[in-house]
Image (cartoon, rainbow, N blue to C red; front, top):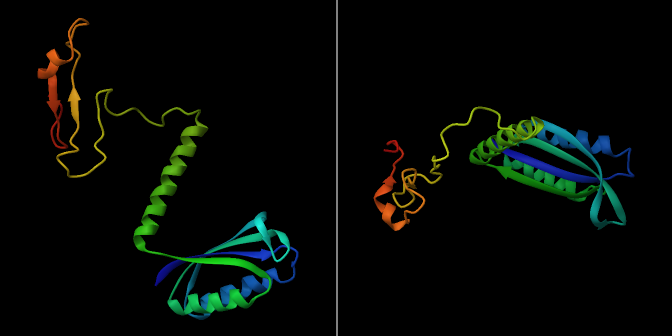
Length: 174
């Protein structure tokens, strides 16, 4: 089964039709052997442009797993329902979901860091001379560190060429 995300906007003035739309969408998903992972009401928001003479809409986000039969039935229902102003349905691969989970973890860590006053969360690893190699495997991208700690103030940069040290991922700086 694939993972899907459905976002739809309903007319915020049609209060009585909102529960019917929610029940029908859940019925379509579960009736075709799908699983609803989450169903969120994102709230009433101003639309970027008027749709059917409406300036506001209520946004909903549904995450579910299922087959292509569910997608076809949902598209058909949402297109014909006059309460639904717009909708979008996205399919995700396992790779996309993994990337999303890692992104959420980084965002949570960043939020925690900012909550702590912008200070680092843990002890700093490495010194000022540490260069992170973000690209994997290429010899071209291997970092080169220039150690000028022994150089005097009057010494020019070309005279310190013998201080260049190449590093690899498995070796430490000499």
